Length: 337
Image (cartoon, rainbow, N blue to C red; front, side, top):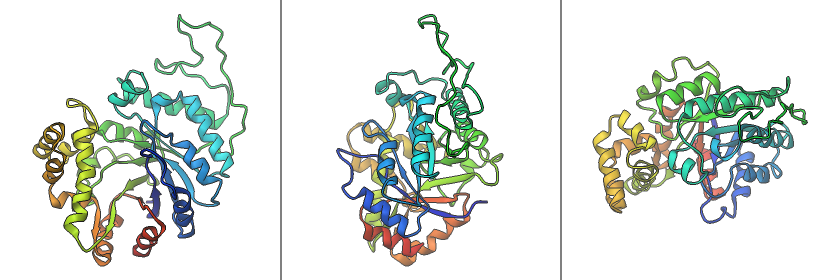
């Protein structure tokens, strides 16, 4: 099993980037963090912040958690990846995911169905670009290369990347929540980026991971809140959970809600979604049981967090990704580690 590593999750931006996002990443590097990760939703892209950080750091790895498949063709995504890897001297890690139908069809204007087949084709094409063993081709229905559709010019040519990649196998991670998608990550990717994880009960993932290789990296974002007011700290995390369970997805198709149902919280998930859609967000957050929120986050005084950190060390998670809004908070988390 890989060593237990510490990383920094910077997420996606709101109205604007955090003014200190580069400074925080630089501090993470000084503190010995293994990696820093950037995300995207329907605002900033995930690659550019890492280029900004990479230009002002030397050692810390740079990962996307995650870029959305529908936002770029596979070869375009591969170009971004090999460019960042070369500019950062081999520090890049490509995390990607299918997102959900609301974003894929509402923002990118692309069809969502067949996410597993699309992901398999997508990653195979990217691997071909990285390997640079010959012209890149794909006979699959989702990303045909060269394009042979009746609406095309019929002049497409299979091409080999001009750039010689610094590494022919840049690590690829998959963001996945469904059982089949997680199993696919274990089959074809180098690592997995879960959104939610309970280290005290890993049974919901065990079957999907039964064929994962020994060096398969599981990089999990964990909310760390150092506070004497455990109840208030948990409530803040509950707002985060309830937003995904209740609001990040359509009523009939919400992958986050489905995960919590598989975890054994169907009644709570249904109630959270109902209240969230009734604009009763405070009530929705309070439906989440304390023990569940407490299991999935690290909240409380330093000694309590240090004790509960052991459950994560004993789990299948191999990289813990934490968030921080200032360098002082990051230092405090690093001291607990």
